[in-house]
Image 1 (tube, rainbow, N blue to C red):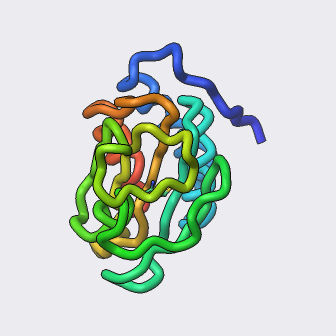
Image 2 (cartoon, rainbow, N blue to C red; image 1 turned 45 degrees about the vertical axis):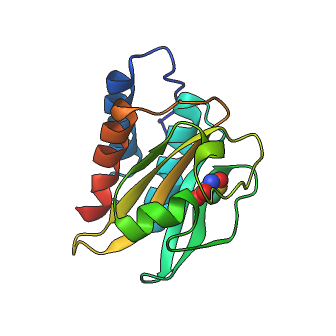
Length: 161
Ligand code: SME
């Protein structure tokens, strides 16, 4: 395989996300497999920015339960109920949630005590059904902004194609 795992921290975020989208497309060309796609997206996003934890929680019981999927980082919580924590909130409300300070988010679930800020993006399939959320955690406060929201939401549209 010719693709590498780039570190994109030297780039402005919109450029980094554009490169990431190209890298994901190149790695997954011709492969229609959501698990392979989740693993690839987790790996490339994690290493592009040097995040603390990057990965998917899959919907295993619609409107009730998320279970961990492909990820990079330290051990993640196994299951999260809809409505609980940042992931469960994003799943229940089907919207991206950006948290500048996890200590100020009521009900935040701390899988890794080093986590300080977080973004969680809903993932839908081509029928529009929620299949997962994508969770990225950082050791630094206020890591994520509108550029991350836009970049990640666009990257994750591949699950709806
Ligand atoms: N912080 C998340 C839980 C998942 S992990 O941090 C990997 C939350 O509150 O949803």
